[in-house]
Image (tube, rainbow, N blue to C red):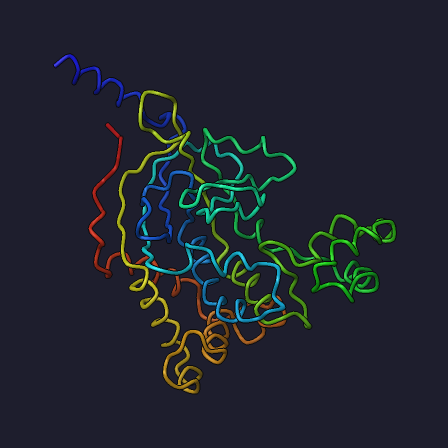
Length: 338
């Protein structure tokens, strides 16, 4: 009895500070063989994780292009292919958020630092690369999708950048070119915007002469917006230490079912376009173009003008899938709320 009482007291202390406690519903697509509890993992609200999910439909074109160098990580990202599931979680979190970290399932090399990491485990890197101390793993990290992925330069700066480095913009020498011309760019007041000109990890620039996949990529972020969260093992409520997050409820479904629900809604919004591509083939250029024309609008492939189907229809298909799809059987609550 005494042991049970001590255990109960310990668990009672393992909770988010009630003064700052709030609930959020988040989502995570991940391999079926990793935990659905997002320790050292990233999640997003419905709009935020929809961005990650929709971006997956670009991969057949990105990964088939040998000249597409800047984000090949996604082509082998273990959270993008294989036996995947999707988890919906209701979390209680401490609202004193820290900076967001990019947490990825390691394949042997950290995709950001390029340092070795243990394959099959998650590794997290602070997205404030210059000030990693701003990512406090005792708290939940949070970031807006637009801040992370929507990067534009003004028309005035674009002229200076094109004149100096237009010839190198889509090559690995782009940033080197900017460095060589840093004084010219500084004098034209473009030095702060220059970093957004070159292709980088996660964001290209969308202009009239950009590749379709580059514009679609950043325009997905303009469409969905949303929030991303990073939840760390150090802040998980599992003992008597101070903590910042715990799971209240969860439901996990097969990713293929979620995909089918979302694809079905998109295809139903523009049947004539998809019919012109023949039998459904989600890797064909025709199907991919129809998909993003329907979702983002006809101008989104070479401009930042985003229209397309209502976001509410996409998020509706996304959230309803967690009710309609059969559970994988891992829905037992992991709450430590007492």
